Length: 255
Image (cartoon, rainbow, N blue to C red; front, top):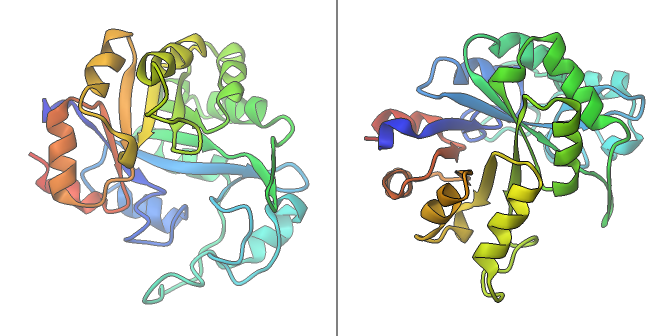
């Protein structure tokens, strides 16, 4: 049923407001969405910040790699600096705590834990799983959250620290080759062995048989990032459990 599909505002609705900012999340709260999605990284001095890119140039008026920047500098930047068409007021990079405080009791939150990155070298922010779990506990939002990541082997650590949390493996073409032998069966078994509740797949990797296979293994299926009404309707009718969009206003016409 279409009505059962969880409607998720990607980065708060990245085509409608500066992504991953409180302005975007506030706007999402008045739209027909069930959840907001955000990205979490760590400043050099260990603060959880809500930001997508490994570097700040695309979105802000600053320069540098998140790994190398202290919280005070990151907070001095305008995260709306390059929003297409401009934005009426500067937006700070928010903390995870600020976003949780904003949405608590109103919507669910999907938290993507990002890898650390310097150039082409990927790693893991030290202690990030523990820090995210502790913030969710502090906000009393463990039951309102799904923690997802491309770093699949981080997810069992999240689950170990807080068994009540739902987790999800994010799937992209960099991770999975649908043409490989037994690709679908192997994929679903891997995700289940990680203790995940969700498989969150890039829209370009969706296959018609995927919902039934995922559901047959006791998992739920999300699809990202879907920005046309026609495709949203098609995927909702296919039996997926969640749809993520940069244009959450489209959800009002999803029927």
